[in-house]
Length: 396
Ligand SMILES: Cc1cc2nc3c(=O)[nH]c(=O)nc-3n(C[C@H](O)[C@H](O)[C@H](O)COP(=O)(O)OP(=O)(O)OC[C@H]3O[C@@H](n4cnc5c(N)ncnc54)[C@H](O)[C@@H]3O)c2cc1C
Image 1: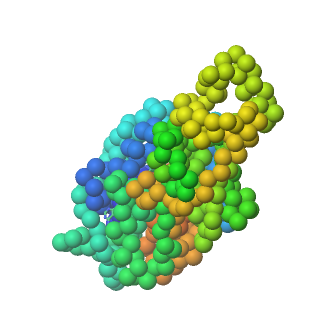
Image 2: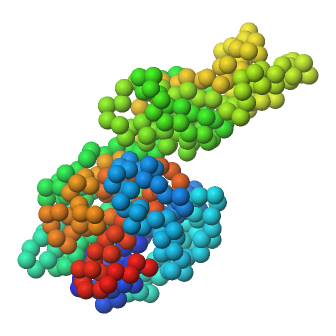
Image 3: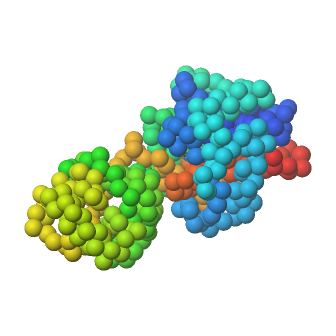
């Protein structure tokens, strides 16, 4: 059996390893347009690779109904066991799971050498621009040549997020040409642009509770570090809020309410400000806030008393004008509509063609949910191939 995988990203590598482990005689070739295999994986989790989330739940994804079924088949414990069965040692930081090396570079190196030792063949750089489905099987078209035929074709080309790391949507026109319904792509897990002028706060970080509203209705709330940019706001809490807001079509006038002191009730914060003011009246704001915030408060609210300042710091309101683009996003919303695939991610109209990872319209929050999906989707495909090719399904 000959299998072609388009893309040496997370889900392509996972698929290749799973297939060679369960069907050792299969000839598995991975085609990748970048020189560097697994390029995006190196950048994940700030270089540490948050490889899984140990409390996977369907509600952490844009399509909970679809994910509920998938997670029932492959819960987080099975995903962890799968990686361990390949020799990957893991460490847990609450629900965030990392390779024990805490190094994305080592993790990619381990996966690539393991795949090669199993007999996976990598061909790069080659950009696949189209394919042909004939009676002989699938042929893949590079810019000059075609390769094939293959019995199985796995499309693992990613979405459109962070194109500098490989996934740029270059295979999407081919999928559209072959009649696949593509839900339009949008940047997910990306900073938000704000109407208010925040440029004086650029670089300032603060722990905060952020609530997102649309037409006065609370859509989502997150607590975590926020980071100010010249015309917007970033940080994991903001990434998740962005994905929650923009997963709903036709977002109308969203706004954020940011509480910089969620651990303090307003009364407590007033007391804290008053106590610092008695001790050091000329500089009391610095007892609570980093200098960019102090500077902005002194500039914008020079005569404010402690009550007004406390209220302001617990109710900063920002109007969202849009999101940063794909370049700054960690995942894309949109992609191949899940309605066109079976529960095992096989195309409903082309037997032997599968989709894994971010090219499908599945996106999760920050916290290992997207790499969990990359592995889970590869497991679903592998299970089907094993059944199709006469082996009793054995997942790990
Ligand atoms: C900076 C950053 C940090 C992240 N951190 C985390 C994290 O810690 N945890 C987490 O769960 N998720 C994280 N993510 C998200 C996660 O990396 C992705 O969701 C995941 O890599 C998607 O896997 P994939 O296999 O679908 O696609 P990708 O990993 O994007 O791989 C697709 C591959 O296909 C190749 N390709 C595309 N088109 C073609 C073509 N036409 N011909 C040939 N090859 C092609 C690409 O070059 C690429 O190598 C992060 C994302 C970014 C950008």
